[in-house]
Amino acid sequence: MVARVVPVDPFDLVVFGATGDLARRKLIPALYHRLHDGQMPEGARIIAAARRDLDDEGYRDIASRALDEFVEAAALDEKTRDRFLRSIGYVQVDVESDDGWDALAKALPPADGRPRVFYLSVAPRHFGIIAEKVHRAGLSDSDSRIVIEKPLGHDLASAQELNDCFSGHFEERQIYRIDHYLGKETVQNLMALRFANALFEPLWNARHVDHVQITVAEKVGVEGRGAYYDEMGAMRDMAQNHLLQLLCLIAMEPPARLEPDEVRDEKLKVLRALAPLTDPESVVRGQYARTNGSPSYTEDVGHPGSRTESFVALKAEVANWRWSGVPFYLRTGKRLRTRVSEIAVVFKEAPHSIFPPASGRAGNNVLAIRLQPDEGITLGMTIKEPGPGGMRLTSAELDMTFADTLGATKLRMPDAYERLVMDVVRGDQTLFMRGDEVEAAWAWIDPIIALWDERGDRPISYDQGSSGPEDALMLMHRDGRRWREIAV
Image (tube, rainbow, N blue to C red; front, side, top):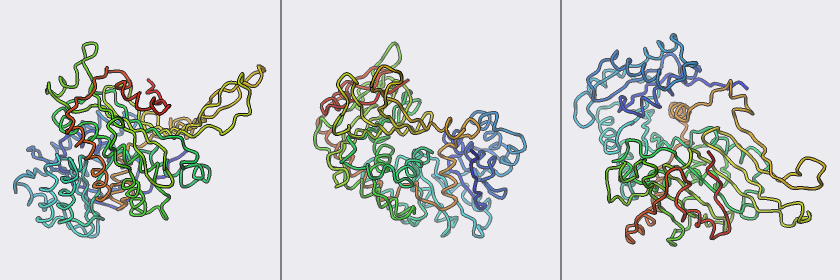
């Protein structure tokens, strides 16, 4: 299969925080790949902005080393590398002062109808300052866009304050709140699976679905982000955005058209339909312990008394006609058995079995959408066991792992940032969160965190390399269900 590449129009991209980890690991490689694949046009300009005292060549050297480190050697060629590096300029800007803003204005020629994108790859405390100074310096116009990374607030009040700050300088159509999970190929395929096929939609409701599991498991710990993570925890860092966004895509009604606000209207309805979590047993918090000499969470963050969770599991309910009575089980954690992100839609068993007991038990059909690693979709089926031994039932999977089915050994799967940055340039907000979505998610999460604070409970310890605390298993066992295994 050959991927179809649709070039975008020439654009100007200003990356604030361009010497940081996100720019090096994700943005520079993503832009290089888009140029390499013919999507980023020759006339596109990238302006790197940061506090370090560098010139154009100094930053191009940083970008070149980032390509060597984070782009596969097979995708690097010197001609494309040179073209890409020539498109990059550097301006020293201190976002907390007025230093460098005049130089940035001079580095940006008149837009002449070109999209101008400001990417805020910086700490959240700088979001409002940069939005204000970009506006005050006259760098933005009606066709400018501003991109912000999570965290989008710390709670509902701070999210509202952040939204108010941006809306004072940019219209909502210009604000792109990025969630890289929504740029993953499998997440977009979930939209196609549901709304481009007549097969599943008649079954996509409480009559046929037993429950839904959403898992985002990480093998790593806080990895040098201890100070940030200890303020946020798994609930704020992952559940409030990634997990709830995936839940929305599973549970939303079909939009009338595949247009940004049509899609986001339906996601907002799901968030507002989430039943309040008032039962403490519906939420489990965990914190990884010292295991086989590997430091504990509290040691990793340097805070012995920390009550921040590195694992959270919860049982949610979408209180509407389509999903009434169907539990949505969500879990995420660090230092688990392996790295995997998966959505599993578990269908109800057949209402009546015609097979004798000796045939074995027919299992649930499970539609599993794997986001990482090995992106793809599988459908678990009950079939007859091959051979002449009579009617014996067994399970098998219809497998659409992209690497096999789509010939992705030849087709490189683009990183989520490649798709999302190009969507910003195109002005397509479909895969980006709207301000009211962010606020609705915080409005559901805040009472859960407030209940934890009120009770003063410590997170439950769990061993590293496990599936999380035992209480998370009990969360489903009480309902007569089991988590899908976090497979190595």
